[in-house]
Length: 393
Ligand code: SF4
Image 1 (cartoon, rainbow, N blue to C red):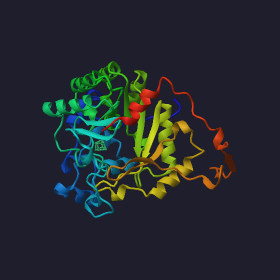
Image 2: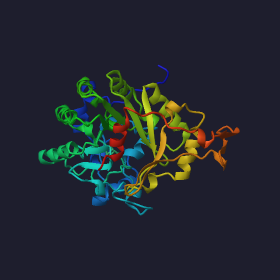
Image 3: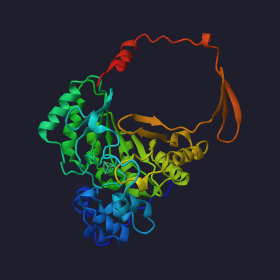
Image 4: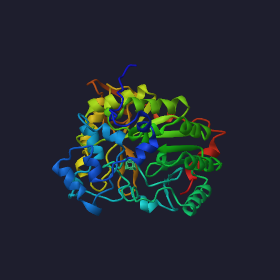
């Protein structure tokens, strides 16, 4: 093995079979100040956060994820541990930074782009990440969607043939039971126009024992299903996490990772390259590196756009394109994603563009004369293209 993935430090009083059982991990989640104090020596600022009452976003972690936040795990600690900064004032603190409530045409459906929709099957997570972008919905103890809402959500997807991709999200869709997940996936598979199903989950990070043989069988049966993981720091890649990721890929479930840049946690190119090289080695494609959304209580966790671009620029040229995630910002209020790309172009003069490469090499790219540019034959694909362009929300 090229990289070392250490096993999580299981407390000796807990049996292997309990520790490696995902339902045990969920049942023994830490939820209160008292629970947290049984595992962590809380600082005064952390204690103050627990007194935040209703102002404070839900608190919860699995014992497994808490075990990674002990000695030397301060980055992970900041992801799971509330801090008094969360309840202090900051810039642009939004309860719904992505404007999802405006794009919510049916219960539990967020339909922002014409060809894909989010289906929020549960609001429960096994860990409430302090940077969460969906604080307006997550953790309200609504659990698995009620039958009536479920049927309405499904009917909405059925009646919109433009929806080719459904993204199961939440909350965390992998906190629901195998039987519930199988029902959702099978119902979606019966809809002719749904081509791709994605599952966005933090479970491979915070509770990798969730990835059982039975789970991957269900995903395989309902293929093509893509798993969108959410690793943010190389220390989250334990032996258990590595085994979970390999189990997905070995069973034909492609895995792509979406990370978020977090102030004082992972905003350094040394950590980004370490995380993404390890993920790629495990056959996980680093997909997005998000600018942290201006969600309530995240002022102290956000980097500046300049800081993020600088990180991306430093990685450019040193890190294989396969391991390089796309740096993106979700435009607040539902503007959609946009890539953030360091600018290497220095000048444009007609058809000549001047570039200064990452290693200081200057060169020009000269485009062919416009009259030489022609369009290819698209026969056989015109209808597919016009259907895609004309899909309506
Ligand atoms: S797992 Fe996802 S939805 Fe749940 S708290 Fe973390 S970021 Fe939010």
